[in-house]
View 1: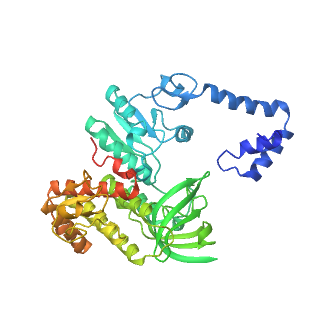
View 2: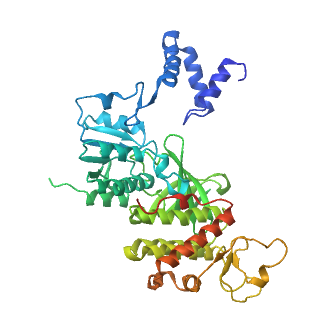
View 3: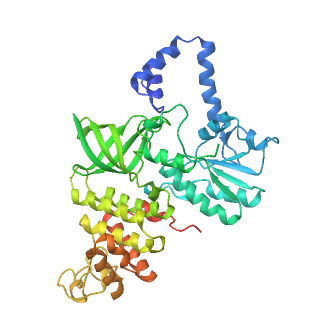
Length: 197
Length: 249
């Protein structure tokens, strides 16, 4: 702490991802110019988050309670679970409003080269859920990159002997893009996973 | 300064919101780190060209010493079939970790570049049944190519025949040469003649015909343990990838 309140805030803001000193400076002066009624709730929200947020006992989503609102929701289908790497991925899938099943957050992805082994993720907990529950399908929605793919492969191999259907979200082209700018691997995958019209 | 080169992506790490720092083995600049702006966004122009193992044609902007920026990356061969096979990616990750840990950055080695490409082609097209031997051979060959292979052809000091491998000497030593102050109780591994023969063939045979070598499971286990101990001594730590489950329980 420098003792200068503005300097302190700038220093703290630079700890956020993607925020350099210049952006931190801009944000600090913006916050200073905001009315108290708008600026203070930001600080309060951060304090509340750090005090109350924890991982759901069942799916490891972020929640204030022991079990998150999705796991508690009686309206959701309990025979399907969607596996994601991070809670932020869950939010994006929820925004689609198309999926009405449960989730399981792994809190990371396998990476042999970085020493991220299965015991460092919530994979054993997923296996236990599948063993205990009445699940008919596990949808693996890990990122479509090497770490996500390795994780998907591992989970699939571990779950298939349990007699549950394991599916992977589709690969393909982003909507609004042009085919001519797509790379060969993405395009090949989208041709392999084509749908009948 | 704009430079163009060919590279194989060895690894990448997240930087900031959507950026990456990518580690390449290049054909003319050795191991090189470069910065890519926003490749993790869905509509990034980089597509999958920065995924590990991709062989690509690159354009870099900036000085090599101060993290150049990738301005263009065109895929030559994606090697995505390796990434989609759990066992292959775990084994190839071990090779990559060995390369990054043992090879200093910025030293050109075109022979190693061609060799790694050959390994990736061989692993991608290899038959599923013979992969275990192939993975072992590639580890041995890679160590030999970068000059860190253990010496198993006779005693490393006098050349006399010996089956006892001493990890802290990186070679087999005969009973006469191993005696002396401080040598009592030195850890060693007794190897079988079969393992030594297989090891020598692995180094000498061209990689594309190495599938003709059919080692026994015991030989694979013996030499894998030897390489693990050798590498642990060289690096003063275990490889991260060696802790990774190869088979799923």
